[in-house]
Length: 305
Ligand code: ADP
Image 1 (cartoon, rainbow, N blue to C red):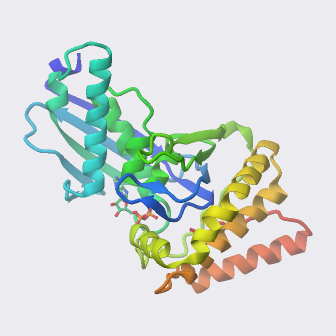
Image 2 (image 1 turned 135 degrees about the vertical axis):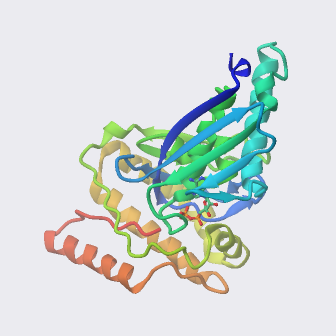
Image 3 (image 1 turned 60 degrees about the vertical axis):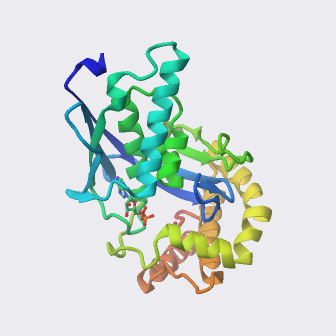
């Protein structure tokens, strides 16, 4: 039993996911509930991944976390929310199975070390892979077996999509407590083997505006964002799901590009405006359109986060 060992250690890896219908904006900052549903493609872990080791021990006197070799403040609200949620689930699982409601291991502190093998906070979804991996590692080390959407989501919204491979939707849900705001697989990774994702790193610098702050300003100031979330995304989610199920690359590629453009348009509509595209990324977009025009059909679709 876990509680009898002096130290329990697990190591997990998690993939990055790239949204093709974008998530931008929360309706609840605390619970991390989105203003619209989103859909993403989970990438293979051969190239980009997060590796997280979690250890619990009765000898640890406090929770601690290291990210890419540097110790971080474990008091960050999102980390705390993940830790609280996993311990709540562990407690619930115990009481549901009528076991001792507080086994020793549950009171143990945890040490976490996480490494991304790609640039952190640069727009490559490190927060998604990072918090999915954290949720999974914590669940394993504390013996939690339930759905981890909520734990991952409390770290970073898009992290719930990295819990699954293939094509994944994050249903926005309607409930105020967020219990129906969960990730679900639309199609498994083997569904569309011809699909290739190219990642072009145009800059490995930190993004000029972090996602959390950026979204907040957009929700407060962009009427276009509200219109998109309410009037456009529901139909786009349905159409994107169809494209994936039928492997319709023409429509998939075009909708991916249009949704990405619309996301950047809402950034420009934000006040003060936010800008994530650089001259290099604009040149890449032009190249994709020249390439498709040359072939007379959509062979490539640019996704810009
Ligand atoms: P990105 O586009 O890379 O997701 P964000 O600014 O949205 O950029 O998120 C970056 C933040 O996510 C980091 O500052 C850190 O707080 C968190 N993060 C990144 N990687 C990890 C990880 N492996 N484990 C835990 N948290 C992580």
